[in-house]
Length: 151
Image (cartoon, rainbow, N blue to C red):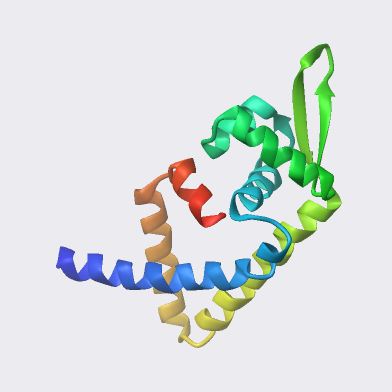
């Protein structure tokens, strides 16, 4: 039984990874996968200090500095000093960055919806329950794993 569940989950994960890859394709014309990950984190968590952002995405602060500089040059994010501490920098999402994340998210959502809509209502509920249970059991993914996928 466990082998069947594992195999089914692996097949489903391949399908989901394909959806992620297709939804990311247009964004990768503008940013790299690590840059997109920064935008996603800022979109989900809001503006934050550079050190906290580096920790959140699992990279060394010097690596993040280069990434943030490129994103700022292209109008995706804004860096600003932290009030009362000139050494700390806060990074926040600009409208262009938020729009890119939203475009990818909406493409992903539309694709998943079109797949789910092909199922009868009771199977849709089964998928919902199964995904909810799996997500709960899996817990929060390691930031380094997500960095590679741009999610």
